[in-house]
Length: 182
Image (cartoon, rainbow, N blue to C red; front, side, top):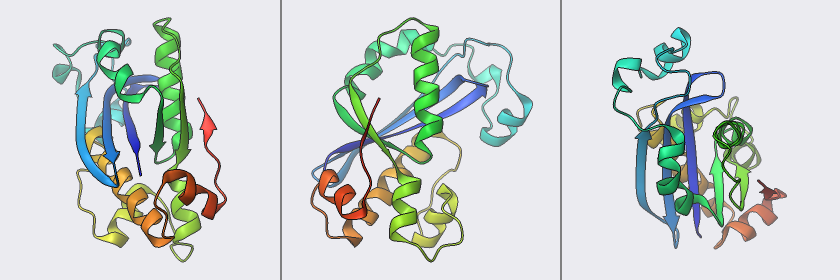
């Protein structure tokens, strides 16, 4: 059971201001990290986004831009299975960032933990990250990328445990979910 959970927080539109990665190896979370990102729209921050995640432009003054971070991030996600809670959002932000800085897309496959949770916990009214985490008693600092990525990883491990899966492929197959190429 190996995969990497990813989460972005955004400054405005497709411009990230934080990325979180949580790595799972052999069914255990082995690392969770986050990096602040000086967005291409710096110093502008959408006020609504800033209220949600609490990351202000003053916290990003000395942060690296996405293209400067990419040499560190790329080996952590390339050739991996990636998961995100609402993967369409996080993969859109990753694609937009790579395109903006004219960086090659990494090879990776991904799936969405929202879809996973909907298949496993059908009785829940909502499958948002905070709703699923509350149901399972997972405590985290919501809307901070590192915490959200780790919460996503925990949800996936619980979901795969519910269906008795030993690998991501086995779990997704049992639930009728397909990996998508990036």
